[in-house]
Each structure stands twice: as C-alpha cells, then as structure tokens.
Length: 192
Image (cartoon, rainbow, N blue to C red):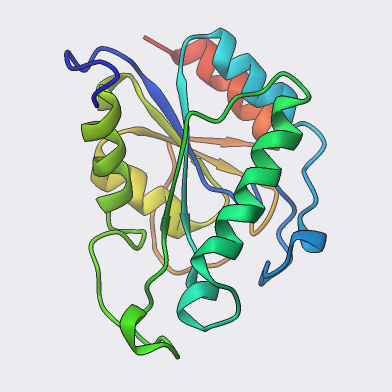
C-alpha cells in the first residue's frame, strides 16, 4: 500500500552501520549492536521535520551464512525499539542479503538491490510514494554516496564509521558532516 501516491513526501535514506550504530566490521549478533550517541535525537529531528526515515543497508553477513534473515530482523526490531524509546521512528528498513561471492548459493548473485545499485531506494520510493527531489541519503562509505548519486538525491557523508575511507568509488558527496546530528543540521538548512 502506498503511503503517498502523489510522491510529495521527502525521505532521508540512512545507511545503518557507522551511521545509526557503531561500525564494528561484521555485526552478526544482537550483543554487538551499540547505538551512536546522537542517532536517536537526530532521527527524532528528521521525524519532526516531516521526512520519512528509511534505512537502506547491505547485509552480506546473510550471504556469508553468519546470520539468518530472521536473526537480522530481530536485530532490526531491537534497534527500532531502542530508537523509539528515545522518541525516534524508523519508517522502513530495506536490506540486501546478496553478495556475488556468497557462501550460501541462494544469495550468490549480482543483484539490483546491493548498493551502489538503487534497488532498495526504488523499492522504498514505490512503496512509500517518496519524492526523490525532496530526499537525502546519509552514509559513511563511498558505496552509499554512489547509490545516492545514482538515485539523484542529495548526499551527505558522515565521518563516523568508515568516514568515506573505504575508497571503493571516486565520488564526491554534496555535503560532509561530523555525524548524523550534524547531517540533520545540514538537511534543515537545505531542505526544499
């Protein structure tokens, strides 16, 4: 069901690891989930500004067989609950479980959803009636920024997590911010 079929609502697409929670390399259990200090208040501010908050995240831990999709869903449920207790709402989470070199055959593929491809973003657009021209993407890696560029949304690279040091793509974000809270201040200033 489309939330807004006229595509008039803006969204902020957030990467998960290094943006909302601490980047630890491979998050494969609930005990490893540690929220970044300003994440909840920053997301709550986006909620108050009227943006949909949509998480788009590559999760090759599934393709590697380190966790199952239900286990990932349980981690996300706890993340949503922790944010909610602090007044922050995630409107949707989309993840890519695939990897071209997956250990598990059913996930071994080149797909359209693995960032920097924009399958996750376009699924959110279709399901929630999102206007890309009013939207932003916040990530800590060049793969996130490249996905944002391909989707034609304004991009913000945060210095938490990888801080752009993954070096996979030669891409320049529209803005650079110290953390998610600083990124939200940029959005407040530049939102249409």
